[in-house]
Image 1 (spheres, rainbow, N blue to C red):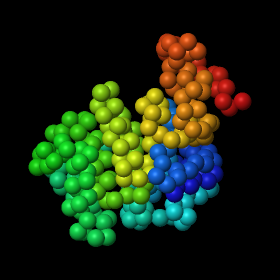
Image 2: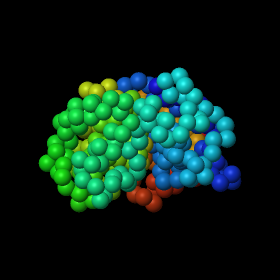
Image 3: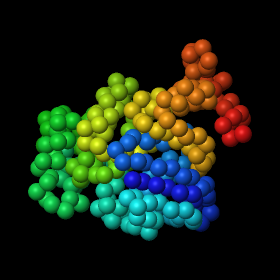
Length: 264
């Protein structure tokens, strides 16, 4: 469904952000894109979503294909109309509008406006709290409820691919588990493909089918989620576990930047 090939991007004609990355998101699958702060994950999200002009971000080389069509030069609204919906980092809900109005805005790209009612009923099945809060201002929701609203806002547009940018950010662990359970359920029941962009490798690899590890704008590792969970570098550098399965101290784990065994 989504195929990125040798993609290079530059900020302000100076800063090379992505250095020839390639990745794929097949139909009906969840693919995790893992990496620390500054690895380039959000740059991938913004590039695919077409959010480049306001960021002074340009594609220097490579291609982005969606359903076999190159979308390098497509505008954000054109990309949305093709079926790619982004749930941005930090949720970015419309705080002054009600929950219902946020969902209505999310549906603007529907070709048949009559589908909105059915799509709204569907997201209420996954997020029943949003039905209870329908007339409440979105800014008064809890962090977890706002994340649910951001995901629901994307789903009402009946997407083919949802890009989730750091859905666990700033949320309590129990809320994160609940939201990721719902993400898994949506993928299984609605067959929506998902590109899951996360720092939290432990939770991401429990729901993803395949994963890529991004570091300083390069893909340094990829594989099936089960294999990545068992990989010693991933266990040490992203899960904080050593060979004995015990957590390592940050002082020890941070030395990975000097080692980077996967780049050798």
